Length: 197
Image (cartoon, rainbow, N blue to C red):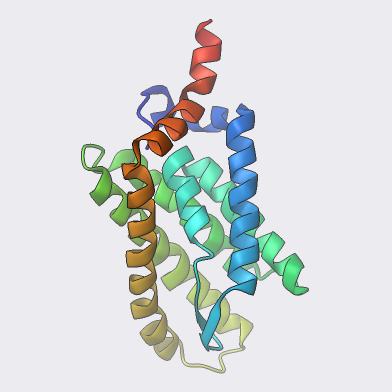
């Protein structure tokens, strides 16, 4: 997670969009989420599937903040819809965006001293808002109420708790790698270093 004071503000996170390295990583995370989510996932029910499509979005939110996380979520859903050949559902798209925004906000402002707890709570909060609530409501309307919303929640809540456990473990393992963590910090500090020269 980034450590500079400047990048813990809204202005600092917006400035990350001007960092070419962050843009490249964000584009890769967008493509990874769109491709993996739509191609390598297992449908459990018509309204629930096991996959790691949200992992790159959560990574973007935690590493680069809510603005980049939200942009990756938006791009990932649109790219995934393009791959599958169906139009985007605005509520589902909002769910993807909110996963990146909420995970970025939680990791930025809560439990900064405990990175492990920050990652788990950021991932969980992003999925509660984006996957368990917004996407479930979007899917309910997409299916025209064919499935009771209580049944949809009953399936999706435990599913996403399991997905959060896997995603959090992957992110924590990456962040515990000193070389990887230093590279993320360097990307986030790059703009500040250039302006100070």
